[in-house]
Structures are given as C-alpha cells and as structure tokens.
Image 1 (cartoon, rainbow, N blue to C red):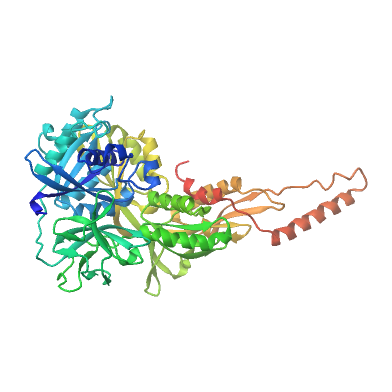
Image 2 (cartoon, rainbow, N blue to C red):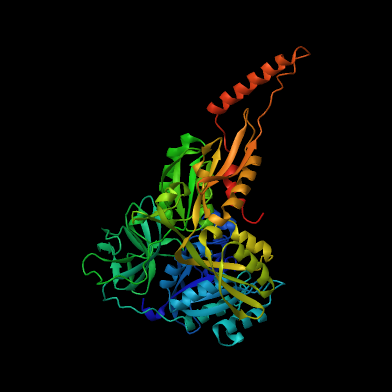
Length: 600
C-alpha cells in the first residue's frame, strides 16, 4: 500500500487507565473483530493478563478504516504494557510508530507512568494525541483533567478528546483524529531492508516469530535474512500481518507492521530491538537504539520436592522461549538443595514468572528473597559482579562494594509531601528536585538504592498516600557504599538462602528484626535451636527456639533427689547428641520474612 495511507500508532497510559478496552473498541468499530466473536481484552491473550487486568506483552494488529474523506487507511495499532517493569517493551513499540494516543483516566488524572511514557514518546519524536477516558463514570472530572493535560503538553483544553472506551463515546472521532494528526511513515521500498524487531514470541512449529516494523526496503518469502546484532541468518517460513490473528501475506514493504516466522529455535538469537536485513544487499548500519535487556532483580527458585528439579529446568527453558528478559543459571543451596538463580526486570515480572511456572507447569516452588546485582572491587584490582549475597567474597579481600541506584519519580497530591519524604529518607533516598506539572500535584524526584526499592517500597507508598501516589523508576548509576553481608546461622549452620547484603549502619537493626521473626516462624524441635545473625565479623543478635520438653520425672513418686538428677542429666545428654545430628526444617515463611523487614 502507498505509505501516505498508512498510520502506525500505539496507545500509552498509566496501568489500568483503559488501554486494552480502547484497543477492543477500535477493533470493533473498524470491523477487524466482529462484536459476536469478541472477548474482553482481545489483544491480551494470556490468562494472567486478563485476571490481573494488565498488559504484559506488547501486541500488534492491523485495521482497515474508511475515513470521512472517502480514502481507506491501513492502521497499525501496537498496544503497549503499562507497568514500569516492561518499559523496555514500551520503548521498542514507540520506535515502531509515528504517533501515540495518550490515554488519561478521567477519575485519576495524570500519574507517574503517564509522564514516563509521554517523555519516552516525545524523545522518540512521536506526534501525541491526548484523550481522556472513562468519562461515563460518576466520579469523572474531564474538565479538570483536560486542564492538567493542556498545562503539560501546551495547547487548549478543548483539543483534548473526551472518550469512553467502554460505551464507545467519541471513538469514531478518535479514528478521524489519528488519520489527521499522525503522520504517514517515511521509507523507500527500493532501499536496503531495515526492519525493527519490536517484539517476538516462540511457536513450536515455526520457531521464533519476530514482530517487525519495516523502516525501509521490502522482504518476501524466499529472501535470506540476517539479524545485525546476533549475526544469525535464515530464510523466513512465513510472512504476514496481524488481523488480530496471524494472516499470511508473503511480503512486507516500507512503513508496514507485521510478522516474520524465522524458524530459529531460541528467542535469544532474535532479540527485541535488533535490526533485520537481507543477507545479500544488507543495510550498511543497524537502526539506532538497540540495548540488550538487563535484569535488575535476582532471586532463587527452588522446587519444594527435589524430584521436580528436572521439570523446573524444562519449564524455565520453555518459558524463556517466550520471555527473552528472563535469565537463569543452576544454583545449589545448603538449605534448599538444587534450584536456579533467576534474573527479572522487576518484582512484578518475578511474580508473573513464578505464577506462570506454578500454574502452567504444575510446580510447587520456593522463592528466596529478591536481591540486586552488586559490583565488588577486589584488592587484586579485579572487579566482579554478584547477584547473590552468598557469593560476596571475604571482607578482607574487598576494596569497595558498589550498589545500583535508581532515579525515581513520584507523582502525588501535595498533601502527602511529608509522609513520602519520610519514607524515602528512611530508605537512604536522596532528594533531587520537585516540579508542579498540575495544580495541587507535585512530581518528586529522588535517587534511591535499588535494594531498598524492590522489597515493599511500592506497598508502603500506596498505603501512606491512600493509593493516590504513583511511581516510575529507571536505573541511574552504581555508587560505592559501606555494605556488609548479614549472615543468618540456624543451629550454628549458615543458611545461604537467608543471607542479605545491607548497609553497615542498618545491620544491627535488620539482624535483630530477622532473628526475632525467625524465632516465631521456625517450629520447635526436640532440642534447643539457636538462631544468630552475624555481620562484620561478629555475632549481632541471637535468640533460641525452646526445645519440646518431655517430663522425665513424671514417674518419680519419691525417692532420693539423686535419682531425679540422673534422669535429668541423661535427658540433657540425649538432647546434646540430638542437636549434633539433628536437622532443622525451615518453612517457606522464613525465607519470605526477609521481605517483611521494612517499616514494621
């Protein structure tokens, strides 16, 4: 099709502002999906996406729309995730578009992720089309929100289109505005092929399916392709577009969005953000902006039943085919035996992966407390990276430990300024700046260690602000800090799965709190169980789990006191021997106690 009749756009918004509902309504209005065949959240194909009401993977669909000028337009919609953990997918989707529909909830107004995605879209040079959704709700305040958006973007409040994705109000007008406002793609069919891979998934018959935006050139069945970052070559098994199911066309030309079945057997060979070109007449250089996805949060996943280790490995292999951001490697623990050290984009990504493993592959898993990746400078001059506290070398061999810091932005009503400042300061946060992008709303910017952010910071933020504050974060830098390993010893044996890397000043408080919690969680045995926290070369805190005691004097109805002493001494020797050979079963709650050390 002539590129002047193509419109490539995406929908961006804060989580739960109605992106997927709006996408459904556009599909119905253009006749891409008939009303009688519809389900809610058409583009959210995973059960978890429907249950949690969030988009986890970006989706693409082609629609045909006949505008009021009588021309038929090819409209390629890319529905992006709204959660901050999947921001990389959002940035790739934006690179495949010329315009973005910015959706703002009429009851909530602008939130942190609204701003974050807006800035991403502006940096990508996209044309922004703001709309206010959910105007049908009784608590909607469209006029007030329109003023907020106009103050943020410039322009008049009347330019912001009020819509209701649920009942279809003004959706036809939105399509007309997309045709008028979003520019057509540029690109020449005759030039060298350069296609951006903005997403992918794995098909057991066709291999990796790459989602493409053709920037220049064309690709047909029979052409040999090459991926410019991984240098992998191959021949496409199928080429087509999404309507919304995969529909084979055999060719994609400049400006179009579609898919290419590569036949490759691992998603790692076909990375999101890579550039696809032809093996012969290749493009001289790749498209800009390719960055390898980097995990930020690490945790151990162990099967409850040791016999499920092989099943867990197979499940991770299969899951990684559809989620290139998931990384893992085998790990052993003295407490939990064999498992895997997994890397995730964030805590929400970790929850999704664990739930998919348990639900789709019928596994019972224990997850250790999440940690982050540290840089450790050694006295030998070498610098290593560790993602497990158990791997931290001896303190005498360390020059300095550097931890990852994040730049966070909190968007909140200004009445909660004080409580947010208190929360961030307690987590070693550093104030950077504040802005007032809307009346009575403040945007606070801080730097904070990632280790303090991943545990329960978001929950604390929501509870302190009654749910009104929203959070966005991105990696900023590694900074040297006075960090030590906090080791937990149970029955005088170190438990590597409970180890933590903490700031030296916080080691005593966290060690004492963790020992107290473990004392309540670990069940009593036939012998006394000492629980100790050690850090900086000394024992910081200790508590004992009292032994279950049998009354050995119950049958003594008199007699000399020495008879009773003999029985008690015999019992004491037996318990001492039992302590030497006995093992302590540590419940799952004990490992999750590390997560609840925040602001009790």
